Image 1: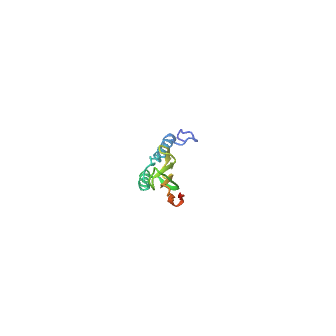
Image 2 (image 1 turned 180 degrees about the vertical axis):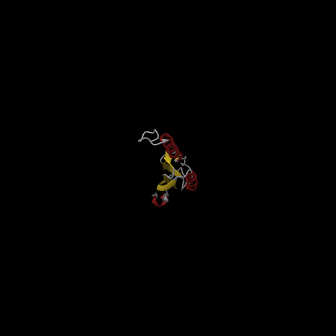
Image 3 (image 1 turned 60 degrees about the horizontal axis):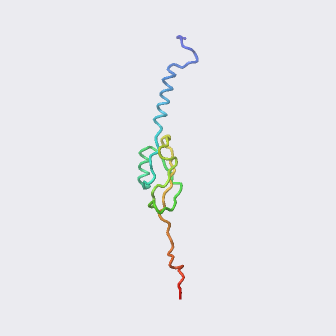
Amino acid sequence: GLGQRPNQAPNSKRTERCIWWSVKQQMVDVPRLIGLSYQEALITLRNYDLRFSVVDSLYSDTEPRNTVMRSTPMSGSKVEKRTTVKLTLSKGPEAVRDSSYFDIYDY
C-alpha cells in the first residue's frame, strides 16, 4: 500500500536521530573532585546529576580530613547521568603515639 516498502518504517532516520540526541543529552563529564571537601564534592556531583559512594578513606599528611583524594571514574570521563562516582576521602594525618614513652635515658 501507498508505495512504501513494507519493511521500512516511515521516518526511520528521524527516529534514529531523536534516540541518538536523547542518549547524548544523558551524558555528562565527571567534574574535578580531588581536593574538594566531602560537602563540596557532594554538591558538585548533585549539580551534574551524578550519584556518589565513599569506598575508602586513607591517612594523608597533605590532605585535610574529609577531602577527596581519588574519584573513579576520573574527572573528564564521559558517563551517563545518575552514574555512581566512587570517592576516596582523606582521614587526615595518622595519629602518632607520643614517642617520649619509648625514649631510653642515659644514667
